[in-house]
Every structure is written in C-alpha cells, then in structure tokens.
Length: 189
Image 1: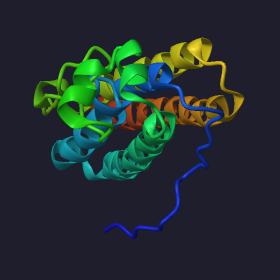
Image 2: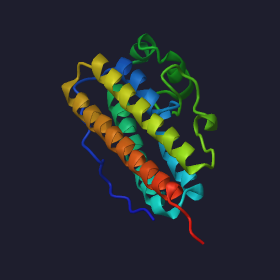
Image 3: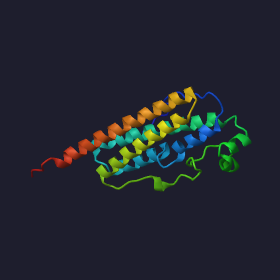
Image 4: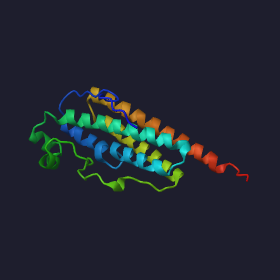
C-alpha cells in the first residue's frame, strides 16, 4: 500500500539548537492530538467506515505519518547539539535521564503516549466529527507553537503543517456531507 520515498513531505530547517522549542513540539509527536494519534486513529477507523469515504481516512492517515516524520526531524535538529544542562533547563531533564536525546512518544508534559488517545465509535458520522475535532485541535496547537517560536525556518515548516490540518478538516467535513446525504436519501424498495 505504501511506497516510501526518502525525503520529507516538506523541508525542515532550524536556526539553532533550542530544546525548549523541541519540548513544545513533542506535543505533536506523542500527545493526544499529535500526529501519531491522528495516523493511528484514521487508519483504524477506516475499517468501519463506508466505502464511499474510506479513501479519505486512508489518505489522511498515511499523510499523518509523513507529518510525524517531520516533527521527529524538528525535535532531533533542535536537540542534537544540546547539552544535558540545556535539556534540563528546557524541562526535558526527565526525558534526557530516560532516553538521552532519543525520540520517545510522550506529550509536552512528559506523559507517555497511550492508546486511549485514539477514538473509534463505529458510527461513521460520529467518528468523522471526532476526526474534524482532532484536526482543529492540531491546527490550534501548531498555531500556538508558532506563536512561541522565534525561528523563521522552523515556522515555515510549522505553517505548512498547520495548513495541512485545515485541509484535512475540510476533507473530513466533505466526507460527513457525503454520508449525511446518503443517510437522508429516501429508500425505495
């Protein structure tokens, strides 16, 4: 199903070592509304969604893995030259003690990723509304990280990700409309 091309969906550059900014970005790596949660949520939900909109979940779920890769690259670049003291000052002392600078799925507060972040009700419209909310929360988080960042290179990549969240939300809204139209059609037997 997938073909992996060894390049990021959008280039990632950073101006300087900044473990504090990396800490904020970790929210989009292993947080409830982050890219891992989104990818797994959508690819899981596709099994109980009507064929008419399954492609939307498949496409967006796959793209979320590309976004996860971008976030991982950002965090790596922001921390690769950091000292243990800089990691500690950035609030990543516990992360450093357990993982050095390796990436690990947790949120910005340090709580490990959990499957409870993933919702799947089995009702296609309920699940799609959950997906719209997830995309809007991710969009908001990207905007707040941009607001805290003074790195113009990184902000360019974050703006790309924020805009993709808007597109995903729109596509999920279109899928809801398709399913509602089908549901509301009069059935004649």
